[in-house]
Length: 277
Image (cartoon, rainbow, N blue to C red; front, side, top):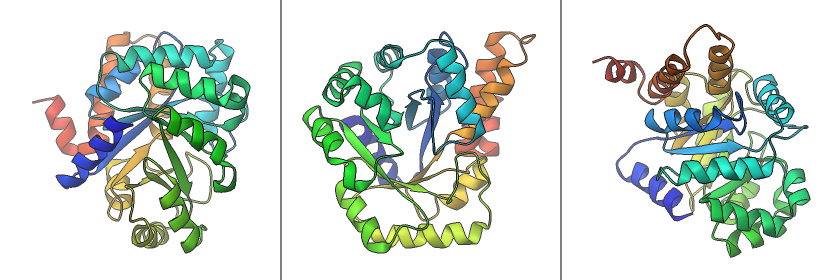
């Protein structure tokens, strides 16, 4: 996980907010995932989360649910995700993490999963349904393979538990901005900011990044005011889904639009100007 730690540290040192982006493996189709990841990288992603398709993604709203179902229907399995990850990591220094749920990893075998993730060049993983009390089997194998393990907090997480999670994580603390699913609206933004300000005062050992509900550059700016960065998933999934549903457009146009969308998330209007000097 050295590349991830170095990337986040570099962002913090220069006063920049790290941008993490999520994309489901096998979406919009198995052949297009890798080119999409490349455009996310070119657009300015500081790190990328590659989603492991799963039939019951409990924390996900409809956009990511649909992307996972689409990938599974196309026959994408864990081995395919590792192949995509290895191909991306072979050509980019941008840190890549896996994100998903415990069941597929148990089916694969935790030790085998961590070994193959390391061999693919992956930096670590995030498991949305593994609480602190059940993380040790994953943490032990991750540490043995040199992988980071990200833990999540939410608005209803008590102060002392936030401190415990900060101590337990080995990559960064993922602050879920809402008590809801990915793709949901942020709701009363002042309440979200109050929660993130509280989390910032508790998380002292590792970087703190906010995710869930971020759809625009303006959302990212507000939610990263008290954090070290932000993560966008559903809005990007929806963008890709919309593009690939317009088959009359050439694929090259799709990829250019993804890159512009990512630049705008990071830089706002300045990002659009950089794409069209």
